[in-house]
Image (cartoon, rainbow, N blue to C red; front, side):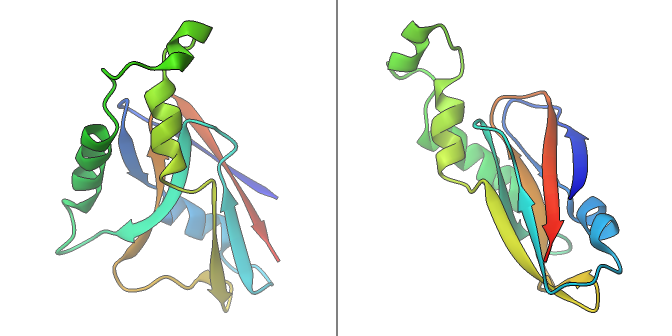
Length: 132
């Protein structure tokens, strides 16, 4: 298993980790890379990035903040936790994604990128990567 640690800068942030993930699996033997986020207030998603899609991550961040309002009446707040909306936002993403490997490289589409989806930042986050 490989481990990728990243630092997020904002409460809600899609952080492109494609280059780091590519570097960790480069040359691996196997046909599938699985990226797993061991956090309940973060997720991992594949989404568009690069030329012609530079605003996509910010649009998704804003949409998730509008869809899941922090000002709602949250039962989890009464349990002493200050981030119930982060848990709900994380349920709209995934805790893992699997990406085929071709010749030891992530087989992503031309505009696809791998993002850590942060909903309770800023924090240090971990992504575990396995190749099978």
